[in-house]
Length: 229
Image (cartoon, rainbow, N blue to C red; front, side, top):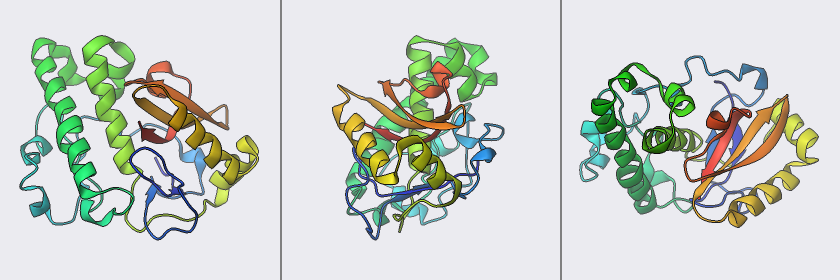
């Protein structure tokens, strides 16, 4: 999936102010929305190991390294240095969500796969679409976190351009209107969940997913970016 959206990010809200030096930008190559397909899209698979080229010694105290090679589902390596995301995401906040929440979902799904052997042959997308309850919730939260981490990058920030800018203007009248609406829906969402920017019928929309819910489960569009709350 070749996409890039330029944005500034915090753990709950992004686009806090314009022209910031750090933040997030997600999923590579902003210009071509027609590359949207899930064939080979890493967050939907069991493992994705080629990320995280920075110093792995950073994770010695996080107790996550064994999960990088766990089977049948593994913990995605972070595609950025957690020390370089400040001030928008502190290393402490990243560590908590990655080593506590994200890692726990991986452990839970692997444990469930021992009780439900068919899970071992399925991708995250398969599981999200097929199952409900605890199996769905853990698989969906792995996918949601994978997608969120992939949307972050050191030295991000800036304005979108190319086809994504055209689609934002077409769907929300302007990038500024999109930012305001996304922040409004994210901050107004009651309880925990994920706010998604999706593309549906070649138009961008905002989707609110409560708890682990996602556009994958609802089959209402393809996700472009997400923010956990």
